[in-house]
Length: 162
Image (cartoon, rainbow, N blue to C red; front, side, top):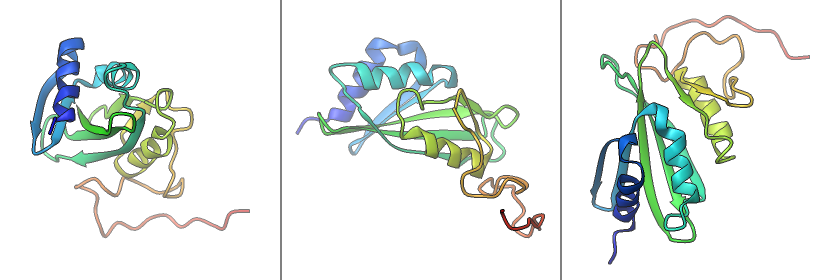
């Protein structure tokens, strides 16, 4: 059985090696770690390369590595319906400026997923057409999925919407 994820990693390594920080493919789990400034280049290649055809961004989430220099890791899962293969792409960003370019122009499905990551972790996506809270109300203070978010924190009360 051919490992399609590894083929995708090999294509990324051949096409844009300077964008990659690390790669691994174990147990059918193909992962590329990329520099945050190159996430658009990687996503565009995954979508547009005829040998890859990753036409779907199926998931986008984040991980908080509290205490590390690059505190947040944004994790993207791409899928090719045409070729039936998957690849995971990860990009790390620091706590001081947690920001990545938005993928909305390449993958419409990134819209709400980026908004959710912004809402829960405070990671910004530059170029997003409407980066605002999606699950919590506008007056909510902080980002509840950050590991240092105080679980006992009281939030300001808001009135009913008109």
